[in-house]
Length: 100
Image (cartoon, rainbow, N blue to C red; front, side, top):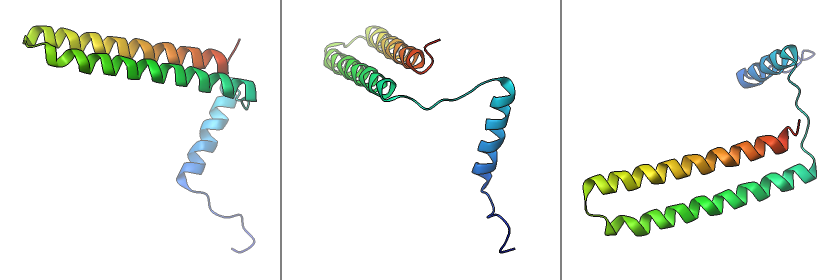
C-alpha cells in the first residue's frame, strides 16, 4: 500500500464529483483577478455598513414603540430592508464574478 496514492477524504471525493458534474454542465470556474477581489471587498464593506446602519436605526426605534402591532410592523420592515440589502449585495458580487 505504500506505493498507492493516499486515501482521499469524503469531502475531497465529493468535491471531485461536483467539479466533474460542473464541467459536464459547461460551468467553468476561473480564479478571480485582483481587481475583482478588490471590487467584491468594496461591495461587501459598503453593504456591511448599510446593514449596521439599519440595525442601529432599528434598535433606536424599538424602545419608543409600545404598541405590539407597531412593533411587529417595525420588525417586518427591518427584516425586509435587511433582505433587500443582502440581495442587492449578492447580486452585485455575482455580477463582478461573472461579468457576462
